[in-house]
Image (cartoon, rainbow, N blue to C red; front, side, top):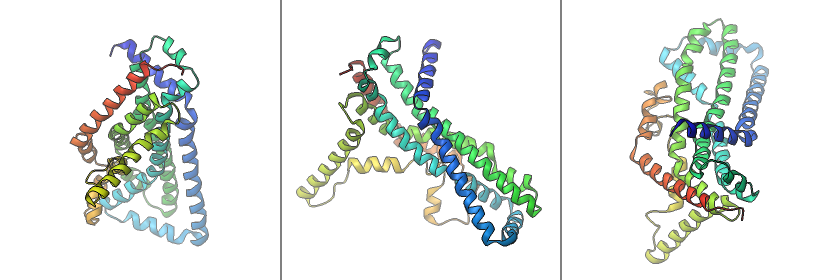
Length: 317
């Protein structure tokens, strides 16, 4: 890709972010506000129950006496705790954004204007995909970081009141640079893991006459139901492979919730669990370079190629 096309791609991504400012920019702010409000309410209730914060400050002193490994684990859990809500909402935002990304241009007839510009359909589709897998995770990451910093500031206040060393016991144990790097790496890896679903959404958006989100959900759902009925009435057993279950499994797997060692949790080996199991680059890389990821990327690229093909032949009708 030459410099001109790269510049056009970045401009198109900025256009997407600008056109969907509420979903991409303001929604993380709202989630941040809701989480901070919830934390404030919990602290207020805790202050009422724990008169003069006796148990809270004793808990901070007990935390300061723990070994470094346990402090790092507790700090890592606290840093990863706000991620779930951000990523759940982000997935919904991206799904509805991609489902309407190519359909909306046809719906409001602005496709004629965009096709008159010296920008290829391939670049247009690429900009929307890049927005979903890079730009949106970056914007939501800002909200996560802001929430984490507020949590650390609150812990710092309690730590100072308890008389502990907040630098060594709180801030250094949180390992913020590593946590932020893993979150970014994990978010983009998760987006690539979901590329088959994202590509399918864009494909449906490129040809559906109306309500592309229903087409995107309805087609695999109907195929899955047909597989169930066919297998049951022909062999009197459940099908070995079901498309809808494959889609749901794809959504539910990958990085959960960013690099956590799920196998260790399932085995119940919590005693040997450390902070590296919550923020390991290796476990994220294992997903990124897995065979399932490679197959998913190929399927996603095929769907995106189909979206480009339909986009080239699209009109305002």
